[in-house]
Amino acid sequence: METLPPHIEMCPAVPTRSDPRGSALAIRGVERVLGGKPVLRGIGLDVPAGTVMALLGPSGCGKTTLLRCIAGLDRPDAGMIAVDDFTVSGPDCFVTAERRRVGMVFQEPALFPNRTVGGNVGYGLPRPERGGPRVDRALALVGLTGTADRMPATLSGGQQQRVSLARALAAEPSLILLDEPFAALDAPLRAGLRGEVRRLLAAAGATAVFVTHDQEEAFLIGDQVALMLEGRIAQVGTPDDLYERPASRAVATFVGDANLLPSEAVGYVAHTPVGDVPLARPAHGRVEVVIRPECVAARRGSDAVVERVEYYGHDAVIVTSSRGCPVRCRVMGRPPYNVGDRIDLEYVGEPSVAFAP
Picture 1 (cartoon, one colour):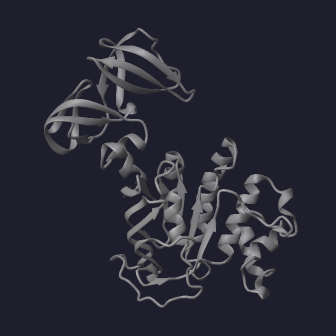
Picture 2 (cartoon, one colour):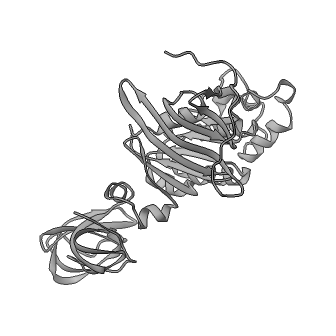
Picture 3 (tube, helix red, strand yellow):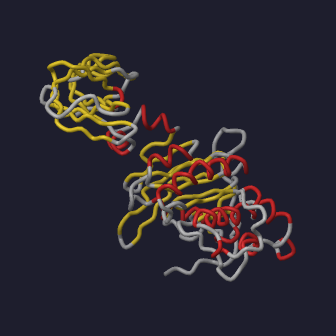
């Protein structure tokens, strides 16, 4: 394995983007091969200062490898990474992890069991400041005022993860990286912490990259979402961009539930098994139209037959067959139809997108 230099090699600043705040993180053409297999394939990404970027993707798509390259725990085989307009990784330079001003929060809190909460938060700060106001401010920010003298074992799992976040914030880094920080928590605690961590990052004005495989989590926490598939960035945008205007079939099917219905398009209209659907972009000929289940309304009729009902409590999905085509329809609350019922379906959503078959 290559031994990386233990010092900073001076690198020139690089232009990032036209945003006057600049990019807290800029990635250009980053590639990484592990075990002879390409893991990162020409990654490019900008994270403006003060933004929380959710890095979303399935297991094995390269999310954690990219995070390690940003942190300086791994070195890309090609490409450039800049933090606060200074190159930290490039063809001729590599800034080691401890000098990048990048904080990390891992899946496990990774706290020192023999140190107090305050000792954990202050770890890594200059010695005179390890018990000072920076530690107190960080603990107050995460809602743990008064816990500095407690031991980690006396805290709940969620509190320990907040201590881990406080430790990252105390160092006042340029960038915070969170690698699926709720993965080890049970579902109710995980759901509660999502909104809390989003609030904490916003209150701190932090720039962050939050890695997750959970679409709901990405949408709740990220100002922007970068969807990563097979080592590439498939689409970057706001949560509604990815959901309502997916760039590809792969994006449409990964982000939420989607019907892909065979259709015939004429300009801004597609003729589908659930009626005419307006299109956001013109198309012609045979296409597949992305139709979200909540955009399909059902009523008693004869065109479709109910084949299955999936009841989730707050809502339900009715799986139907319309003109020989399976269609999923979402309704709120208790489903009004049973298996075998005949219904009519109608599209009631905004203009959708279509892809060539």
